[in-house]
Length: 224
Length: 126
Image (cartoon, rainbow over all chains, first blue to last red; front, side):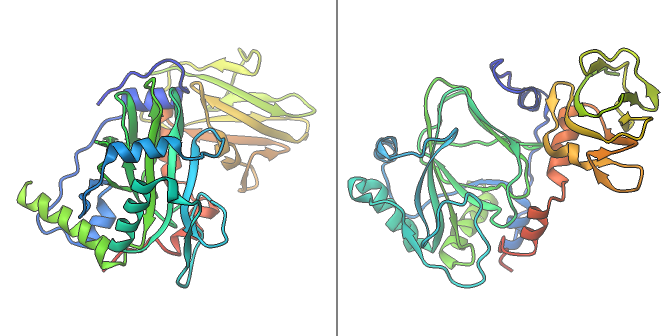
């Protein structure tokens, strides 16, 4: 889909949104779990519990964000480690901890508890993106290529684009599996609103997290 | 067919001659020039040469208004090495459109971090 952005962005970003050609991923009915991780760049998942996205957004707005271009609030991660942005390599089990007291954020605390009941989480950040800001096209480390990216709001004119694949169909409250380690991606908030997302890494060897993917595959096959 | 603007910043005590596809560019002004029509199906190259054996360092390279960032360190040098500094010439290959070529290069670049990462995690269940 061709998107004409406001003039304020670098030419590389404007050209990407104007000229890049989308491609549709056709998945076979017998897609295996390993094929999913190799071939799928984006999948909207369904969590096995209820949550209130409006309340989560309300709490996200009140979190303390680090004052940087893309404002981050490091919520959960490996013990005794700062937010290194790229997860370091662990060759043994790691202990994680909350990086702030979620007592004042009950909906977020409950969500985290429910997520951790599915399987281990290895890192979690809230991210605030201001209006008319962007993240230049880049590719993440293949150290942790698969993330779950859950928009808490997604204003019109907010875009998450994968090079050669198109804009992702992201929705508030819908957690999306994304493969950012094998795809050049670019994020633009061309709206006039602040944009909030919850982004986290999980241990994909956990059967609970794999079950979410298997459920996605099953729904694809049944055409739901 | 397309023409693009090439803008650069070099450090050199001597004169730097700029060549595009082996043709000396005589219309360089303020470290910038506009190419003639470039064929989309061919690979092109811009080369910074010095004839007095002075070190040339390429610090910035903008192709079609796009900052090529750390691509500058992937220049081709006469001694079969790669980098952005040499006392004879530094050469950069590219295709057009620049945005597409550059993103494709980024997707496939082999920086140390990415190579190191590939040998670890990114767990794919069997």
